[in-house]
Length: 457
Ligand code: T4K
Image (cartoon, rainbow, N blue to C red; front, side, top):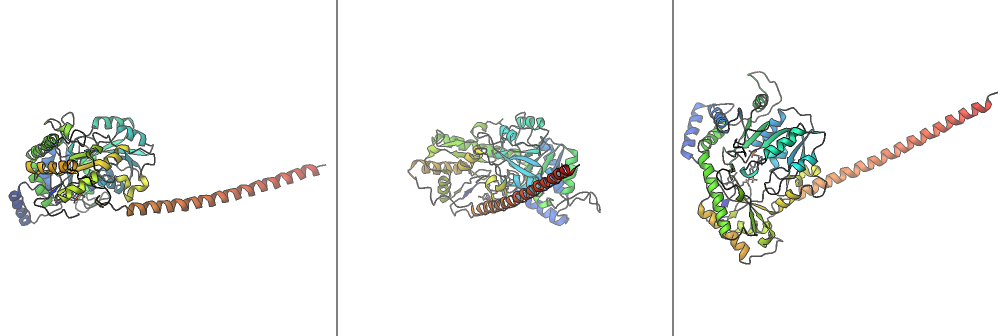
């Protein structure tokens, strides 16, 4: 993690919530004294039960993080190795890693430019006979249009999973909680998330078989003391992680109110500064109403051409002022080395993804962000936009993204392609040789046959 600059108060995206420190410290003492630290214990059980009740879902399986949680949920369905899974490229790389680590092939689709949820039209175009499932990603704490995605999936007989890492506490349009749809939905308990458990994840599912398979797989595939019934891994959540997440689950509705208040404060301040009349688009704006179901776990602005400088310049200038905004998800999963060979080849196929990768900026939010922090961020944005701080992009864009790994991956692919072309040429030559020799032999046979005919009395 790059060091944020020193400042009176550095504002970061994802300052962890630690909302009941005393209560948590008591839990740690209880855990230490019990000598039951992991491999299943009362705090993990209480967390699973509490989340089940809060979400209104049949099963919750606690795991060590959301990435492995999504992998285990996919593995539980025992898809054929290499089968294709549709997912948006505009997501954290974990979504693609989970698919790949489950032995499946990620197929990158575009998102809807306004909602940032998977574009069904793009998913339609990317579907092949090998497609078995689709992973919708509920970004920023807002449920995407699950009904449309599921209608498409039903037509193609695809399984639907949701990467709901950002979306604990969010609700669908019909009021049901995120966590209740698809084969499974997976939440993150990472330190930067609303329900901070240091690290951790929750698989929520109404599918009994999936819950059993994931529960076994998180513990090496054990079904009893000495019986291993499936492949597995170590994806258990420890008691200490569960205890912190449980403390946060108990106050989740108050935390949601705090997040919503910060998002509303950004809306007011950005509007009052005149930044929403062209320079910036505030993604959260349409969902600020209390009944929107959006948790506002992240607040995002799109830096428009009218801002006068690029998103990267805005980000660099903010960082100088101690505001550590981030450009999620730059440069797009399909543009990272491990997935370069799977990037869609059709020009413009990821048009919205590319546009968002180039313009979206995530601002500091969370329970630790106060009203004057919001005012400070907006004052900095106003200054960058208005006070002629128009600087050349060159040299200012933070070089967080090391393109060399991507270039190396592309060069390797090019090398492999050249070798395959040479091999194909060899095969073509060999085929031509065989054909020539066959033609010659046929000719000889014809000659012999012709000769016999002539010799007949
Ligand atoms: N799906 C989606 C859509 C996701 O976004 C994620 C994770 C996953 C799946 C997988 O969930 P997990 O497997 O992690 O459960 C962070 C998180 O590491 C990652 O969990 C998260 N998404 C992603 C969006 O953000 P970075 O690379 O941005 O983290 P980092 O270290 O730059 O932290 C962000 C800011 O938070 C920094 O400015 C500093 C601050 N921070 C962070 C930590 C960890 C703190 O102040 N204290 C801290 O302890 O990835």
